[in-house]
Amino acid sequence: MRSLFAGCAIALLTTTAAAARVAAPMRPAAASVTLSTSRAGVRPVTLTVELRYEMQCAHPGPGPLAITFPAAEQLPAQLLAADVLVNGHAATQVERSGRVVSVALPIEHGPLCDVIAPAVLKVVFTRGAALGNPRTAGTYTLTARTPRVSGGTTMAIH
Image (cartoon, rainbow, N blue to C red; front, side):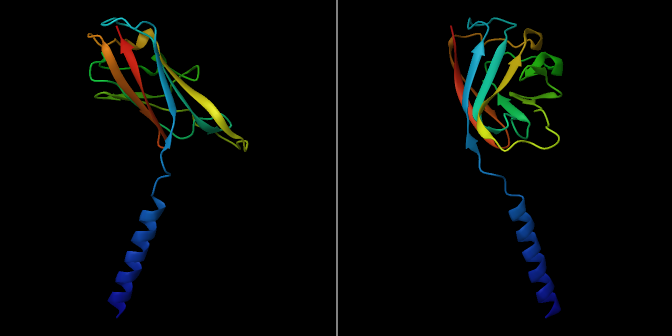
């Protein structure tokens, strides 16, 4: 009987722990991308990604921001945090894994206001990041997501 009780208790704790780990539902974000030039094959280019979504006190929330570039995008082997700006400030950490670039978002310390309103998260890959447009003209998809929001957009290359 004790082993049955212990087994039920473990099952209950496991279920409760699993329920606590369930992430908040993913919310949509309006995404846009801007290039310094849309000519095919140009490198380096400045690429700006903007996500518009509801934020608390205009803070983007927990990160990282994972940007998935199209397979045809020319990405450097390594990206430096100083070459990526998050809302006008140098990123604190940038990592690349295949086509995905993860950018750390600023962590807010202290109390926040209670205002939740639409705001913009702006990430700029400067020329120093050495990104390059796809070599072939066409329309390419780029997606961006944080643990809470996700958005996608296209970029036209001529």
